[in-house]
Image 1 (cartoon, rainbow, N blue to C red):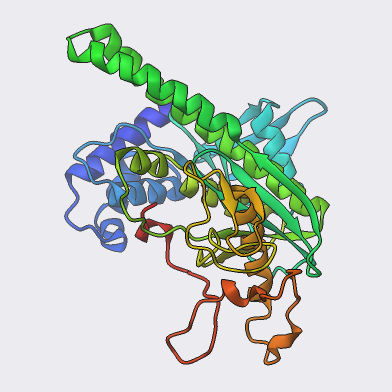
Image 2 (cartoon, one colour):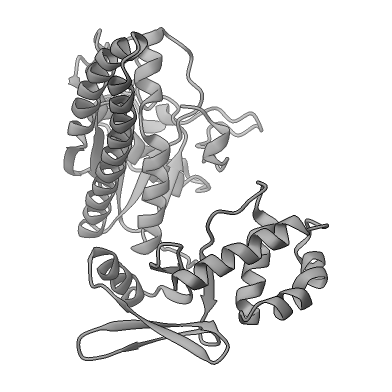
Length: 385
């Protein structure tokens, strides 16, 4: 397999040197007959190498993950003790690769049982076999309850809410992420001062620290997403998050904390897990979620404490945790989104016990409607946290 990978890279660099067109079909017409003459690869392998050449932006290609389609160029089979993937490396020559039954294989089998389909396998330059899974998009019916999630720099606050206004559960996830990153920031400051003085050891430590921080945040965000989706399945609920847009700079420390919120990684991971478990994910507008009082429904502009940890309503006097209240507001707004087009506004549930209704969470619509809750469908790349 190492020889196969090396030959594939050599053929790709040869095509890259003689490439005249960047269009896949033109490159195929120009070089396919030459590739068949100078190599012993299957047609499907040659076509995949051509696609890699078209996507390449550099002058050389160092490694290629070659893909094999099922069933023409690849198949799978089981023995009493092993699972094998048989790859067609050359015409009339197939190699059966045993798959190690580790966590990745367990994840693969769980996805296959849950409806995912694998029609393509790949061979990496290191000799590992990867699976490309796909699943058709299905229409997810809204569940009865809603899990509202508020993402901030220190934790993920979660509230499980019913349409009648009953709060099943309120939890906090990922508190250790902020604590760990704060220690890493302190460590990075010390190493940076040594690196500025010319210490090569400090520079190497800074690189390792960056990788360790990235891996830690990635793993913990995945674990938090797993716990939230399991909570949604347990309580038969949808999941709602708010869409964070551009923020107004308020100082160096505030900007650093906000920019370090792993919201994009959290959202992409959450979308993937919700797709796996057939959970509906709603992204609601963040209008007044931090200023709205969950007791009386009033909107208080200056109700937060100096460190933004507590919220105190200026009308009813309720004092609650800011993150917990924000996650509750996200859940309430998600339930309002369900009834956005309902003509009878009085049909909305009355969540508050005070005289002020929950429509304080509604944003005035520029089109002419009295109130509207907008779901923002813009890609996350167009927004900065």
